[in-house]
Image (cartoon, rainbow, N blue to C red; front, side, top):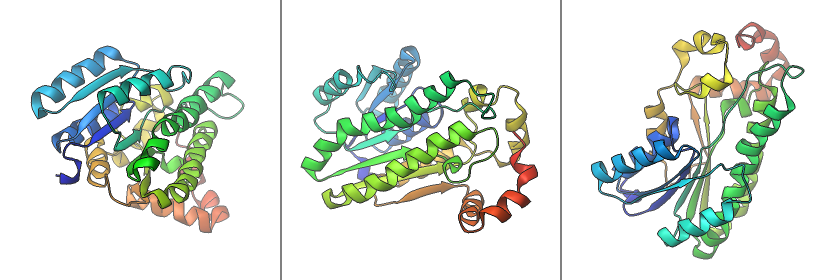
Length: 264
């Protein structure tokens, strides 16, 4: 259990399911108050009730689409009326769609960037100034191994996660002088409903079935590192090793890994 989280306030985007939901439950189990953001109000309220009943901490709910940038200021104003400070922001909201570049619709590409990148940046900008004044805080951005190692049929999704990593790495350096921690989380495929949207054919999910990550294990790793100066969380380790090799020897990795990359 992460005892550092006792009475801390954590804002989690994309909290209605997947690892966002698991992070909320595990953080509440450590004594943290949670602010749950997502579009699915009904699911959020169910999660809110469960957290309040099981863990006896405060849980707040806000129905919001992080890509609806005009509504975010009022949402965060409401959050700051509910909790005095935001100690941790988990930018978890995101989605992917696997298509080859010429087949991907521009609407889908724009949607991924609006949510995965611009929504993440917008939410960060609503907490960062106050964290700087307090000289305390932790921003955790859920990126992806796809942001390190792009593969076929994920050009737009990988590009969005590359952007998340670029923003995160720069922000980490900017925020360090204010004692604010910034962490990138780079998981491989996780057993959530992500693939219901990303992999309509079901082919990729089936091909990576034996490598797929348990969402509870991923959430536990993230919660355990909250309020610590952790640069990255990379899961699984062997997949991250492949990303490192790609950085060093891109041509060799692309040639040798070609068949595996096309399993989408």
